[in-house]
Amino acid sequence: MLSCGVLEHVTDPAASLGELHRVLYHGQLEQDTIYTPDSARRLVAGHGFRVLDTRLANMLPLSIDHPVVARLRPLIWAVNVAL
Image (tube, rainbow, N blue to C red):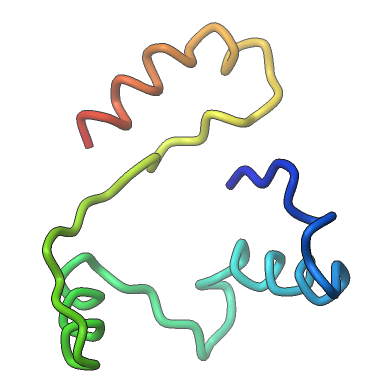
């Protein structure tokens, strides 16, 4: 996850950071639900939205600050696009 230039635009930065933490650790708690593309599509469509497309995007991390990741970013990006 990458968030640049956002906190200065929110009313409550502490609440925003709390929500960001909750989302980043999604799936760690017993009540968390992990959705597949199909289950997410059914949930959204079941609430009146028309789902035109679903896809997985940026499944591999690009923002890890490590020399190996820096060297592999073009390959990581290519794999992300292929996914």
